Structure formats: C-alpha cells, structure tokens
Image (cartoon, rainbow, N blue to C red):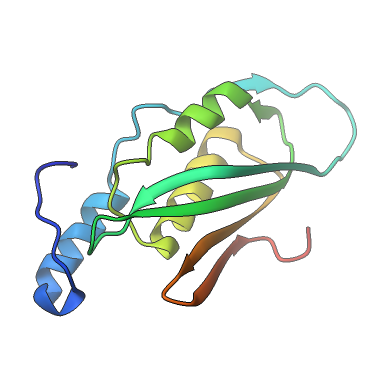
Length: 143
C-alpha cells in the first residue's frame, strides 16, 4: 500500500469515497510479520500484560508518523504470542497510513485471531497531536 497513494495535506482535500477506500485498504493490509505463537501449558488462569511503547504508523491524511503505546492485557487460552514475532508484527505498521481507531481494531483482531485468549483488552494510546490526547480501548473492560 505504501508509495501507491498520495498524501493530501488536509482531510478536506479528500472525497468520502477516497477516505473509505484508504480505510478499507488499511484494514485489509497484509502485515509482513504475522504473530507467531507458542503453547501455553500453565494450568492456572493468569493475567498477562504486554506493554509496547514503540508502535508507529502513518497518519492517513498527512503521512506524518503517529507514535503509539500499545498495552495488551489478556488471559491465555492454549497459546501465547512469541514476543519477538509480536515486536516484528508491530514494526510491520511503520509505513501504513491508518487512523488510531482502525489501528486499535486491527491489532486487537489480529492478536485475538492468532492467540485465542480467554479474555483480552487492548489499550492504544496515541502521542498527542494537535493538543488532543487519544486513547482507544478495545475488548474486555474488566480485565
């Protein structure tokens, strides 16, 4: 997807169709680094938290880098993510133009699909842009 579309300096320069196409393409993005898993054989219900502060993606309008902190809280089922692959998975978004909310939905969906947790919550915190703090919460609220 990168390099095949033009950044526009403001959202007003984009049609609704162009925005919808750009969002759909971001959601269908084939991350070159899928999340690999390892078996979870612990026989207890435990809460696991992975907190990653180096997630970056591109603003879908301006092309500027957006910086994120992604925290995943989950209760394992039969699998765990292999952490190096999780880090590479996050790095796979570096050139993708995607909004905060869509990025959160993608990471949550991909993680749940790969790992199959009993319960999962993702908290995605975006670096402040234009004076606005943005936090996106997806998944279980009571973890």
